[in-house]
Image (cartoon, rainbow, N blue to C red; front, side, top):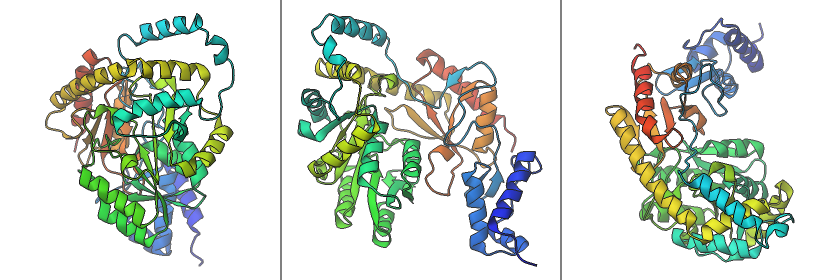
Length: 444
C-alpha cells in the first residue's frame, strides 16, 4: 500500500482539528512516531507539522512536543482585536499618548491654517520629502549619534513603510534575511511579502548569539541582518559596545547589509553608538514617531548609504511617494521646536513608572524587561499554554500578544509580550493583577 502524501496527512489533521475531533491542547505524536505510524520519512513528518503550524492549527513547545492550538484567534501573528466582552485593557499594542498632545495638535493645526504654507500642503511632495524637511530629521538624529546628510534621509509614512521600501529595493526573492529568533512581528510579514528566507539567530539575555550569526553567515549567503540593538522588541535589551562592534565585524566579513530598527531607541538615555554610526556604508537605519509622538501620525524615515538612496527612492515612489504633506509639516514643526524632545523625556519617565507598576503587580513571575521601556516579556509555566492563556484573558476583556507573533523560527516559547503603554497609568496595576489572577488560576 502506497504511503499517503504529506498533503493528505496535513488535510486529515486540519479537518480533525477544525471539527473538534482533536480538541485544543491535544498532544500530537512526536515527529518520529508520526513517521512510523504513517510510513513516511522523518522529513515528511516534520513538513506536516510545519504546514499545520503555518496554518495556525498547532504549536511546537520546546521540550514538550506539538499541541493543537486553541482556535480562539487571540494569539499568533495577526490576532483578533475584537473581544467577546467589553474591553478592559489592550496589552497587545503600544500607543502611548501624553495629556497635552491633543491640545498641541489643535494649536499646530490652527497655526498652519493661517500660515503661508497652506497651499503648499495641497501639493505633492517629491518622493522622500523636500530637502529642507529631511534636514530637520537629520538634525534631530544627531542626538541619536547619527550624522547623515539630508539627502541621505528619506521621509516615509511610518517606520514600517521605511522597512518595506528598504527590503523591496535591496533584496530579491529567495534572499536570506538573518533575524533574531524573537523579533518584531512586522519583519515576518514583510519577509513573507517579499519572499525572503528568514534565518533565525538564537537569542540570549544580552542579545543575539553572535557566534551563531557568524556560523550562519559562513554557511548560507545572508543578504541582510535585521537588528534592534537599542531597546529590542520584545526582549528590551541594549547591546553593549563590544557586541555592536562584533555584529558590524560579521556584517563586513560576509558583505551583509544591516537593517537597523530604532523605533524604541529614544527611550534609552545614553546608548552606545548605533550600528549606522559604526558601519554607515552598509547600514539602513529606520525609525519613526509612532512611539515617541503618536501611532496615528504615521511619520517615519530611513537613513541610507548614498549608493542605496536611488533604488529605495524608486521603491518609495512605487509604494506611496512618502509621508503626506500635512503630516510632514506637523512632524517637522514638532521636531524643530523641541516638542518631540519634550515628549520623549515624558515618555521615558512614563515608561519607568509603568515598569515599576509591572514589577510590583507581577512580582515573583518570570519577567524580562528593560527598566525604561514599554514592554514586558512574561514567561509562562509549562502547563500555561500561551494560546489558551490569551483566550482566557480575552474572555476577561484583556488583549495580549503571544510569543508566536514574535518567533521567527520553529521554536515557540511559552511566553507573552505585554505592551504597557496603552492603558491609563492609574489602571495599569489593576489590569496586571487581573491578568496574574487569570494565569495563576490555570490548573497544572
